[in-house]
Length: 138
Image 1 (cartoon, rainbow, N blue to C red):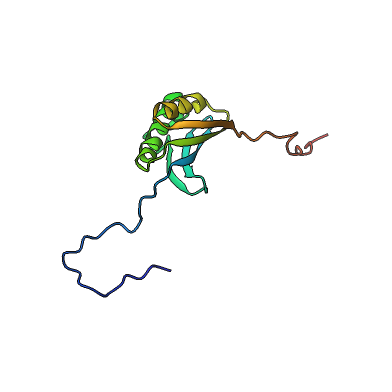
Image 2: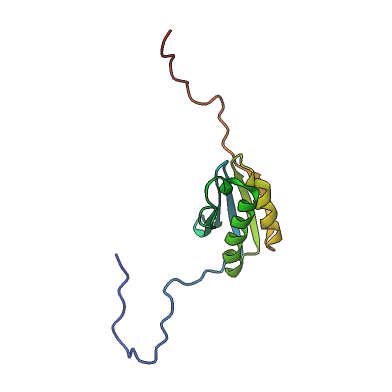
């Protein structure tokens, strides 16, 4: 349900501030998803709430260019710009996926001035995977 706006008091000469206050976040987690066709960078606080997010598509790359290392670098820089404004100084980096943008995104995060405390590869690996479909004609 929407938050009610109080009706009391004079409305003249009153500066209206944004309801969403900018949180100060000293430490965060940077999630890099590097697929073959796209790179997505999401920055969260330690509790898991998303602070900033960026992908190759919303940085202006289309088609096969979204999977390139340059696109990953651009995505990481765009995500870091908003995060630095929030006051983030330290971050853990979790990298997922087999794509070409893994190293480029990590390099761009290092250059942004945020101190990286941990780099972890969280790519899911199947321990023999799903059962294959049965043969159609024997």
